[in-house]
Each structure stands twice: as structure tokens, then as C-alpha cells.
Amino acid sequence: MFYLIGLGLGDAKDITVRGLEIIKKCDKVLLEGYTSILTVGKEALEEYYGRPLILADRELCESNIDDTLKEAKIKNIALLVVGDPLGATTHTDMLLRAKQFGVESQIIHNASIMNAVSCCGLQLYSFGETISIPFWTESWKPDSFFEKILENYSRNLHTLCLLDIKVKEPTEESLTKKVRQYMDPKFMTVRDAALQLVQIIDKKPDAGLTRESLAVGLSRVGAPDQRIALMTLEKMLDLDLGPPLHSLVIPASKLHPLEIDYLEQFK
Amino acid sequence: MFYLIGLGLGDAKDITVRGLEIIKKCDKVLLEGYTSILTVGKEALEEYYGRPLILADRELCESNIDDTLKEAKIKNIALLVVGDPLGATTHTDMLLRAKQFGVESQIIHNASIMNAVSCCGLQLYSFGETISIPFWTESWKPDSFFEKILENYSRNLHTLCLLDIKVKEPTEESLTKKVRQYMDPKFMTVRDAALQLVQIIDKKPDAGLTRESLAVGLSRVGAPDQRIALMTLEKMLDLDLGPPLHSLVIPASKLHPLEIDYLEQFK
Image 1 (spheres, each protein chain N blue to C red):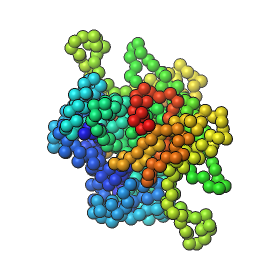
Image 2: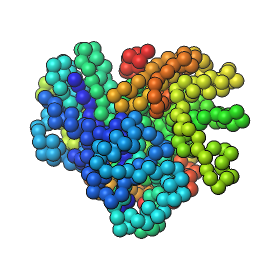
Image 3: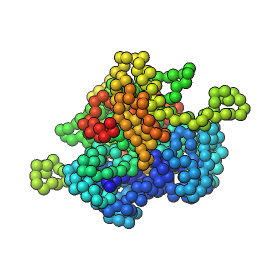
Image 4: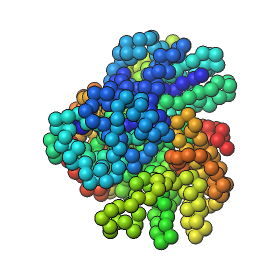
């Protein structure tokens, strides 16, 4: 059996009881480490589970997972994923491959930022399409996500912005070489995201959003040191919400009275 | 301390380890029983936790919660909520009241249908606004949710439709009386929802959705007997997905190849 197990958002104890029981009985347990991270590292999880974990990077998950899946025909193998296991496309693809190999699989759900974002007081059913903000480079500054924010905004919906994560990304120079070299891990902060947004806004003064528009910055949602801050995008350029992961919300223009009351505490 | 603890979606073991530890140390534990239900009942949870639970109905949660919250100033009190605790507005309101009374609170997140719906293979970031479909009565047949489905559809986004739940709802006749009488619990099925949708569609032939449009029916997501079915709304009128809870998804018109491959297994 192949198990995809969600770890939730905080630390080792945010796994479900069912998930923990499965980890303990599995023959092999992999930890997916590039679509998201926990505030605690691999070692803390290994200590809590009392067993070693195999770190599964992008190469293993996207190109070399077949051997592991085939092994799950006769063994119990789990892949641990931060948040909910089906947040990323890669994991849906794995389940399809498992099926092709005749391997049964089971999903153990958990909280993800897609629902835990409600901790800021904005109602989940008032969120529109979720978007991702990628790190810009010198030569690559995509801004199509901004149109989606505007579409949500024009329908009076909030937008959850997932911020880019670069873990074990090959350097551009090494892409064509035999031996890959990797960049240092990089996590987009709320400030990074606000900076990119403000640059787009400056070029589109009639878009509806301005430097004075309110935004909600969130860091380490679900962890004891979670932080939430409500302020203008302009002010967010000076905000430091601490270690990763960060997320950003662009709220709808008209909020529910309860949303206003709740957000007030994060001013 | 006042704890809001999410129970997840399946049975007793879908609580997180952290949530279970808190339940065990609390002085009083309430189970919210009207915004959602687990496939297992209160008794199964009591047996698993080894302690009695106080059933918290709508009246307690919406009108009579203040005494409980004030009690949490000196005691540890938990309210258990199926799914994630902040799915419903009521619970956000409770946290605000707790704050007014000077009571600290903590949220223990868990999976909710808002993220676990990804088990059907449709990608979470391609969902638009979530809508609720209410039970129609003889004289009350609202259809504003349909416009929201169409708006998502026109932007090529999926729509998650949460289906109505009636638990301990006062009968209309007893609303003005001193002694309330209650209706039997009622859970909207995927078939009920399809029936209402088809009635709206028949009146709006140019809306873009037809009786032949595809829909995904889900029941008991996260439980071992979870079921998922992909078919036209017309065919869904004859579908029985078993016991509650049910949810419905109206997929976008153009799907990602991986979404198509994954959905295929539910035909």
C-alpha cells in the first residue's frame, strides 16, 4: 500500500492519530521536502516518530518515484507531505502512477494553508481563485497572477497568494551539465511579495488596487509563533514576519462586519 | 483557555495528536453538532477519548455560549468541530467574544472539505468561490448560488458546492411559541442538489450549463467508505451515494490533462 500522509502546518504533533499509526507500521517512510516545509525539520520528525525518514526531493518525486511505487506493491510505503497531501499536482500524478502499477493507495488528509488561512478572520467561502507569486529574476518578471487578484477583487472576493519556495533548485548554469549544482533554499517573504505587487501596481495606476490597499501577511500559520499582520501594501514593504513560510492575502474591498472586527486585532 | 479543535473528516482517529492531547487535559469538552457531522457519532468519540462530551447545538453556540467562554477564564474548555474549526462564521464570532471576556483561545486546525475535495483529482488552485446550496421549500426557492457557479465557470474555475444540513432546526410553527419543536435531521444529497440545479437550468437554457454538463458527486470524504462519482447532472438525478455528508463539484469547462486522467476512474 502507498500512503500519502498530510502533516498539517505546525510541528510533529499536527499529524493525525491515523497518520501517525500508519507511519509506525510502514516499511519505509519518505518526507517530501520541496513543495512546503514544517517549522520543525526532518530530525525533529524522526525523533518524534522514532524512525528514520528518507528525504524526497523534486528529482525523486517527479522523475524517480516509480521504483518506490512498485515497491509499494509488496511493502507499506508512506510519503509525508506538509499540509494536505493533494495541495500539489505532483502528488496527484503519483497516485495515478501507483494505480497504473496496480498499487493501492490511501490519502490521509490534514489542514493546509488553503483552509487554515481562515485564522486571519476572513471567511473561506469569500475567497476566490488561489494564486501563486513566483520569485522574479532580472529577466523574468511574470505578472499574470495580478490579473487574477483583480478578477477576485472585482467580484468582492479575497485572494490567497501562495509565495514561492525554492528548495534544491538546480542553478541555471548546471541545467545542461551532468553534475547538477543547487541554489540555497529560498522562501518568499510577505515583504518580497508586496515589493513585486507594488511594482506591478505602479505600472497600472487604474487597476483598482493601490499602494494604500490593505493586505494581510501571515507567517508560520498553525505554529505556536504564528503571526498575522494587517496593513497597506506600502507599509508591508517594511514588514518582517520572521522565518518561513509566509502567505499573503489581498482582501475583498467590502468586508463582512465580523471579518472587520476580527482583522482589527492584527492592525 | 478556550480551544477550538478541528476533528477532520473521517472518524475519531482523524483528530491531530495535538488536538487529542488537549482534549485529554481539558476540564470540559463540547462537541459542535449542527454545522457538520462525522461518520461516527458522539458515542464513538466519547469512547475513543475516554470522557463524556457535551453536545453543543445551534442555540448553545449562537446564543448561549458566553457562560462557557467566561468559564474558560479559569478552566480549560474545548469545542470540537468537524473539519476545520474556522469553516463556519459562528466559530470566528466565538473567538471574538472570548477575546472580549479576556479569555485566551487557541485554534487546532484540521482537514476540511474545502481542501480535502482535491481527492477527486481537481486541483485546489483551480477552484473559484465556494457556494452553499440550501434546501428549497414550497415557497422559498433561492437560486443566487447558480450565478456564482456560472461566474466561476466563465473563468474556467471549479465550484465546490456545500450542501445544506438541517440539524435541530426549529419547526416554522414553533418559532413563535415558548416550547420549540425540532425537525428531523436532514442532509442534502448529491441527487437533491442536482435536482434543484436542473430546475434552475431548465429555466435558463442559455446559461452555459445544461443537464448534460458534468458534475462530481462526493460522499463521506476522508472516511474509508468515501465515494466519488463523475457523471452528467441528468444522470445524477438517479444517483445514490449513500449516507451523509455529500458535496458536489461543478468542474470548469476546460480541465488540465492530469485532472481528466484522475477523474476518469470515477466515471
